[in-house]
Length: 309
Length: 165
Image (tube, rainbow over all chains, first blue to last red; front, side):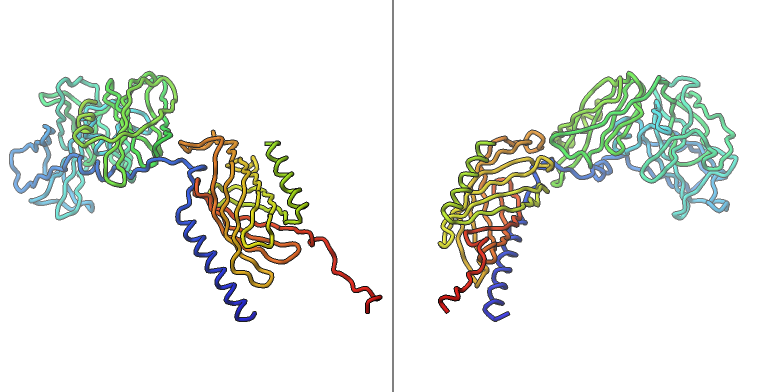
């Protein structure tokens, strides 16, 4: 190839590459792809709003009990605590408590009330943990802590002790202590005292005063939108009749009892950090699809909305 | 659509009669991931600025089913032996047949499109060409690859007559 040919091909190729680069940089697939509003996960926002874990330093064998900010009352003995390897514990040690008694707090903490896919009626969730020098302590067997969970109108022999089985980000509730190799020795049904519901718990961790919701069947709600990309939107359903909190998984809320009245709330945050929501009330009589249009909302407005559930 | 196809056929035939160039191409739209077919005539073949009526059709099997009838103005530059490059501006009427299946908020059946591009054509008789075009309305890039024919395309080499040796 001569020098002139080389110059020609170099020039032509450079021009084509330049033009293609400039044009490709502003290309659009709008005709075949949805031009949707996109959002990021609201988890950071929800974390900023969730209930703090209360920390109690136990340095003497005082009178007790431990009382949480919302009235959860705990009676326990250091003799019931041990390190994971079985060694005993001496003072001081730490007790940590999270109290979730409202749908708002359960939503902020992303702690739905579901056992093996079936909805639970709840009177509240707590997480009770103990630590010694950074090591998580366990209850020795057979031993139990007494817990009272505040309730204005507790029903005798109604709520059961459910334990949270943590699997990644998901907590599944179960009454079966055998999951952790623990033999049940205490009454698994909550008694009633002047505080509310009271029971002896045989495992530290997530505790829930629950009752399985009786239903002839359960349905699912799928969410779709012509305007919003819902892949990072979190959906919750609150069923006020049973105080059940359900959370979406892969954009679907399932396990809704037949005929249940549900308050749907969706939460998302856009790339600028602005808060968005969707809210709809409906009665669920079959599998359904809800069309969603996310709308901007302020933090105080969303807080008020969740308080009103 | 038939009337437009007929009109284009007339243009195509007139291109032949005027001893200009005619051609066809395969088209790929990178953004809609669609394959199309195109035909064109080129007038003022020897001039610096050429006029080219064109018709393109994107098949119903594509995500976008549409056809466009329009014309290009082409400006030749960087000629080297049998290789000629050019820039172009194309304006055309576009009928987006399946616009209703698009999620675009302002999708319409009838549209006016404008495109800019560059191309390279090779040879003198049967002339392969490659053309990169950009649809400014939908912000889509397309590649046209085809062949152009002129009056000399199917003529053999002239043989010397022995009587004149």
